[in-house]
Length: 83
Image 1 (tube, rainbow, N blue to C red):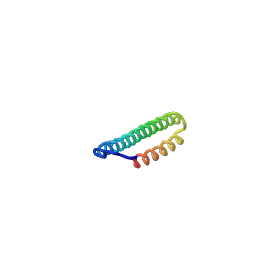
Image 2 (image 1 turned 90 degrees about the vertical axis):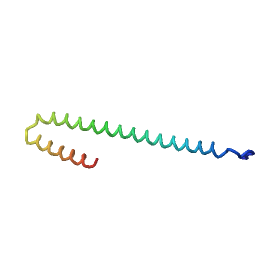
Image 3 (image 1 turned 180 degrees about the vertical axis):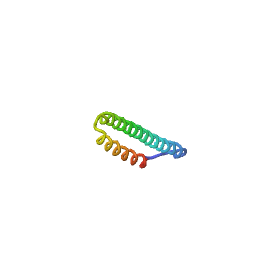
Image 4 (image 1 turned 120 degrees about the horizontal axis):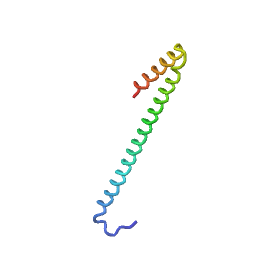
């Protein structure tokens, strides 16, 4: 590429590089926010499923329901610590 008049070339190139960097950062932040929303929704889904299964298991004899409840509370406490 031969540029005959090199006067004023730096500014447009700098704008081009800056706009590409801005677009890359913007897309990366959109991907992060999207994944965060997905993880939150999946977490809420599984918590809802656990509550529903506990409600169904509460019809079981008390010994079995107590073991399941203790196990789920143990899992929930470990999940909350990791966040």
